Image 1: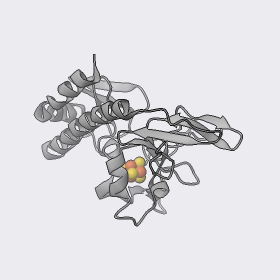
Image 2: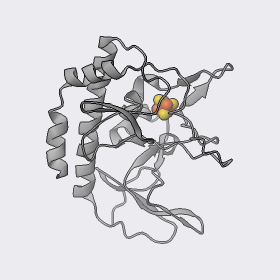
Image 3: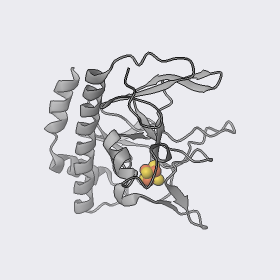
Image 4: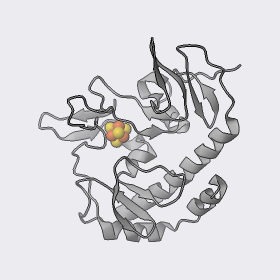
Length: 223
Ligand code: SF4
């Protein structure tokens, strides 16, 4: 299957049908924060939070320049290698920036441990649609095996699954899920079309997104 034909499939997804599937699986966010925090590995050191964020979402989160690019996003570590001075090499996605605890930089917890997203209204599509994905090749799947599937909708491990959801909320989630699948495929096609080796030197990192090759500070690499 080509990315283009998968993009056609994503564009044809019926939001009403996706909403039916979400309603039948059931979901309500318990604000446990599991999808915003470092993953516990059991080995002492937690695995840093990695959630894909698109270039236009990074601009949104920078809020008109209030935040620097690096405050919001970092190179997705997959594909990078550990050089003598830190990570180096090429990667093909941006990840939400993490804090000193390896949680998402936008995650905050009340004293009683209730989690909250400090950019809730502007949170990226991957966050809006957690813990769901669609069964379209080339669209990303949250970490963790799918634990349920209804039609084209897959549900990934999350304690909020199985809870009642309003039809209106299910439709909103379904619309975001479709938007995400379309956006992911458009991004993948853009990355493929714009890719040119960044000809990196030692210790350098390039992030190839749909707008071209960039440095970790978001500036374009023009070579
Ligand atoms: S942006 Fe918000 S919802 Fe998304 S991972 Fe960060 S804290 Fe969680």
